[in-house]
Length: 180
Image (cartoon, rainbow, N blue to C red; front, side, top):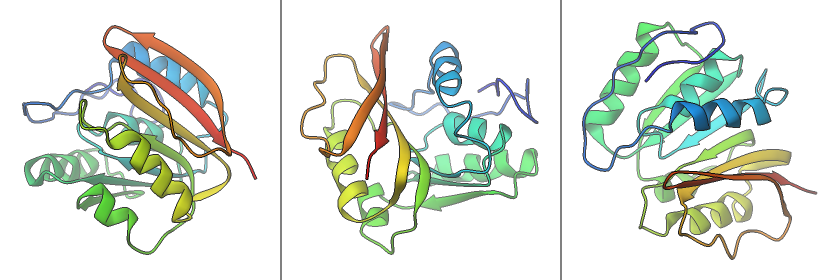
C-alpha cells in the first residue's frame, strides 16, 4: 500500500496476502482525502476493519492527531504494528479485536471514522448505528463508509447527512456528517 500524501508520502507499506483483504484503491483514497482535506489535521480518527491500514495510515500521514485501527485478524494486526513502527507513527494505535466487541466497550469521541467492513457480511449499517447509539462520534464527525456497489445503505442514523457518494468498479463509497 502506497501512502499518497503527507509526511510519509510515497512510502510503500507491506500487507499480508489474505483472502478478502482488499486495500482501498489509490484513486478512491485520493478522492476521499480530497473530500476530507480540511478535516484530517489534528483529528481523532477511528479506522474500523482496518485491514491493510491504508485509510488510517493515510490519515496519520496527513496530520491526524490520533488514529486507532481496529482489526480482528492477528496476522493483519502484526503487519499493521510493523508498518506503524516502520514510519515511527507514534500516534497510531492498533487494537486486535472484533469491531462490535470494541464498539461495545468504553466509548471515546472521534472526529473521523473509516468504516470499510468485509463485503457481503452486512456489517456496515449495524456498525454505523452502534457508532451513533454508543456515543463514539463528536458533533459534526465525518464518517466514511466503503461497501460493495450493490449494497443499498438503508437504516443509517437519521442525524447523518450524506455529503458525498461515488462508485468505482465494485466499490461504492460515501461521506457522511453527524449532525447535532
